[in-house]
Image (cartoon, rainbow, N blue to C red; front, top):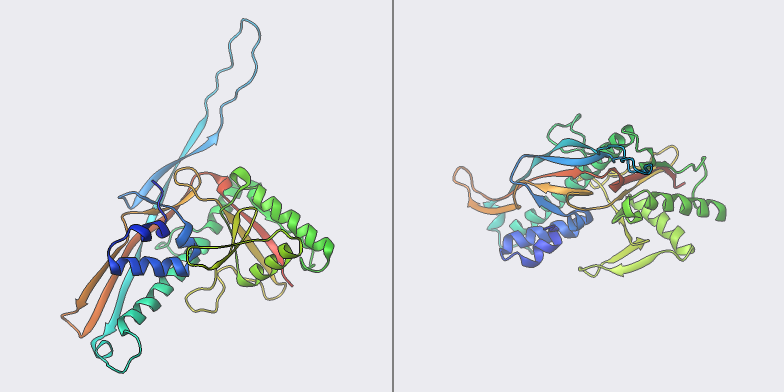
Length: 315
């Protein structure tokens, strides 16, 4: 059964673990919506359809031509993630702090972890960092190299901002439709972009009366287009560097589409459920420690579960 962190939170009875899950869900739409498969392994084999069998016509009193579909196997690995959340005993024991010092440290560490997962989900690259898993940027490049060229769509802005005129607005909406249509079932779950792109896309869709708005479980505003949530993936842990950048020279950026589904689309892998343990006061130094331990990765079977609209001009 597919579980998201938001669903796990509803049934979690451990107060510490629930607070951790809720913080991650609040800080990351990816962590909120991505379904997780528990594998019990550090690596899992997945099977994808490579070629379909040929089904056709036959002559009277003749048989059908024999044909067999082709499957391909690949291995998806999990990365060992988590960390220690430490608070010095002197700070924890201080009576002049407004909030609990350990709780503050936990919130800060979990925000950093959520930002790191967001970044890896987009930009993870096992070639440059073998400790990571491949993010959707690398996966789309691999999908395109396999011949699924329709999963990388050029905006064809020709140096003109998408909000420059009615004509450019309409042309951008056509490209956005092409991005949505490239996804299996023509229904992505999320359209991922940076903050500037989100404001621009919202403006364009609002002018065209195509922007839908609802509220999520935390009563936050959620914008969507054709059922796909519009998400600002945000910044890296430094709070400055955009995970999906906008080039300084031409104000170009990318918009990613993703469809989730365990076993048939793109989904999250976890070796086991997230572990959160209060280790208490350490023996070797006066520090209170909480440990977060979660081995996670990403898997993609259907190449049409991912796509990107490339070089969107926001100038």
